[in-house]
Length: 477
Image (cartoon, rainbow, N blue to C red; front, side):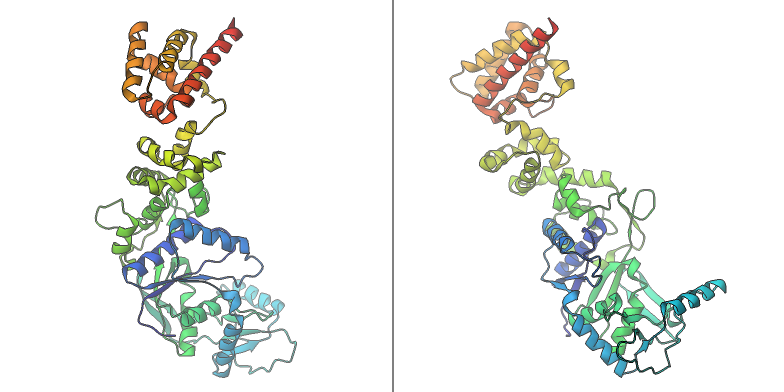
């Protein structure tokens, strides 16, 4: 299949979750094709049958869906194409580019041990390369690619620049294992050709695979795609990114309250820039991103920077954009916000400036949806709910009870009258009220909080607060 349309592919192995490095690769493939009106293909490379699972496939698809990176084609599964890979191997055998090898594991181990002893690079020694073997039915063997022994493989990498690898550095790659299954490099080369992939974007840890795949392309007479090998992500200590740095499932970032737009923004900035701009919408990234503008040095994953970007995206988001993620977080707290989704959308602007994550936002607004007895933060209750606050709190509750309308003006007047009657400052009364209304010492403004809760819940919680003080007094009496 040949085409002039740009085609990239994201090709994860379903042996685990979609981690943040894989998400970055998928994002770069997706953005580059959007910039150049190309096609983004999803391929599941499940040739490792022992470690590949359907659960991992589901998690990968869920992660891509959450990030908003839908493929234009796929997912395609390598496990469905085994017959095609073996068909290509037969062509390579017929044209002299491949050969059967009957070397036992014991012989190969002995050869490699001898090579290590003499200081040579351990590798296959070509024992069967020119043997012209005819393999008997049932005889254990593998099929190897006959790698050229002279010359070099050269390609202009879209990110790394010119890369040269001498053929003498490569041994004869196994194409088919002794159990008849195709190997990774064979399957990748065949699929990239058959799917018309014109640009392969992947991590620089795959550079060693590229010359092997190019050899297969050339032996089959196929057009070789372009390649762009991205620098890997490192932690702040300079080591390769691991779980302790943040190389966890993309969906864990959802659980921790990050917005997909913020994760995409942050990942795009790891190795790519557009002037001094730090904050990007997805539409801007699709318009501006080009993989050839990536730097060659390793990008440093900085969780503090991700948090900062996330806070910015939360503040800039519309209620409609935030609602699904906040509802997700509230559900994790055992709250079903669906019946109150309209109310939730209305109150979101009160919480957007006060939260760096959706977890934090959900915790800050959960008081609005709790009907049972509200738990108080111990430190806030100890500081603000004291016997000295009870008389003013009781008077305020009575004043609120008598209000004909639950309006901000009426609430402010009742509040001010109580402050004057007891000679209190705003903070001396507002903080105890805040604790009994929300359970914590921090919330939106007290009148906004009363308005969001409404008359019934506000009066009920004020009575709960008075009962709490009464129990407290009985305990200490």
